[in-house]
Image 1 (cartoon, helix red, strand yellow):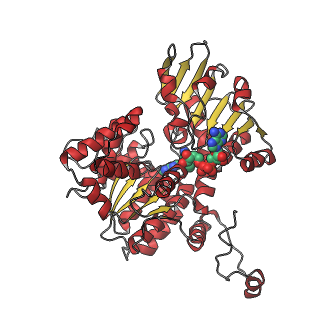
Image 2: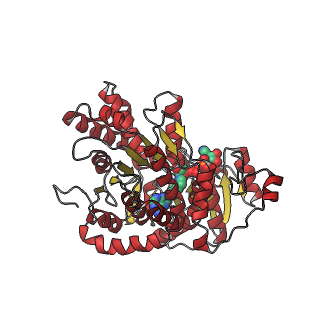
Image 3: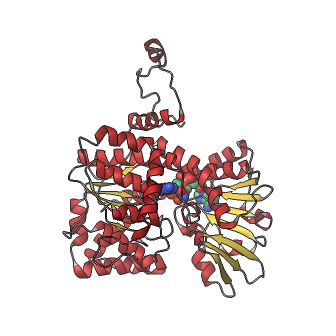
Length: 468
Ligand code: NAD
Ligand code: ADE
């Protein structure tokens, strides 16, 4: 645990040496971020900017943080999940003098307190910019602001997470009754990393409650088509195997949700020779699953036969306690979506007669009243970051290059309140920065060819409606 009076909270600062070596290895695989350091490192376009981050504190995130610093920003960071921190990477960042508040296995109370610490600069004021993942920094600011205006936070107390958030807001307001309104006034904007966070921002905007400008980084093609799909394709099975050592070949695996993440998850399980089943609510994604050769099924009909169940929907109650009661003995249940509410974990933990045995951190066996057992990974939280180290560095470089470009856009030009996307030129730029590392060589359009298909010779090469 971090020492009192130090402006960080990490598991053990002595892990910094090990963490630093891992971060430098990650940097070697992150050509986009390295190219931005080279292009902007001298000019320091983020000079003067205070950036708060709420995003999984991994080795890849350490490379992002140090890129923002190299571009001139001052940074404070917290993780966006209680299980996703790499303690070595966090220690390396703290050792470098960057305030970071993240410990793998932190409690929910610590989680929200760490977010608040990352949000609060030593002069008692907030950041100019935020990098958010899943919307928790945005929620803290919005709920804190509403509480400051006198709105009751009682709606939050239905969940353990909400109770911890409420306690943090109350503690903040007890010591500084106008913190949140000042923080919102100062904030130039936020860039959001993931599907679920974007959904939360769009809902706020629709209800006319959004309090600051925001960039939707997730929907850059070089983010969602890469990180969500190709990242999940590598990190999901890695996590299942680290947690259980199970043989995937020959097993029957159900993936709930065939969006960006579900497509990568299904492909990886199929590549390991599992028989893959998909559940979907959207007919387009359902038809895509069938065209990819998977079976499209109803969860209830297949549960007694499946060995591995993965939720990847960004929705809630996808796997209920009633479902768990019908599962096959020794089946494995996990979630790769952003929040643990995809699986009814709170309801399972409250179920009378259920027994839980911790096999090792983030791998538990639950024995249900009916007598059968199921293995639940990372307590239903995102399995690839809870049971493994998340997506590989290379694909995180595509995501995080977009993040840096969004931060630059917010810092260099004042935006109105709204949810914005990076343009296609920027998307193509991010892709271009990653080609050489993989030995790729692009073909150049001749001017005649460019005229014939009606695009500029140097891009953008597609209309915004193109879906890749
Ligand atoms: P997406 O919108 O592309 O896909 C989700 C799919 O789930 C959609 O096709 C939707 O129709 C389907 N769905 C919704 N409710 C369903 C239900 N009840 N049953 C079956 N299917 C249902 O979103 P995405 O980009 O694939 O992201 C999914 C989740 O994963 C989000 O929470 C996102 O934030 C998260 N995410 C996690 C990681 C990670 O590293 N763990 C990375 C990226 C995204
Ligand atoms: N999301 C998925 N994988 C990640 C990683 N390695 N670092 C940060 N965020 C992630």
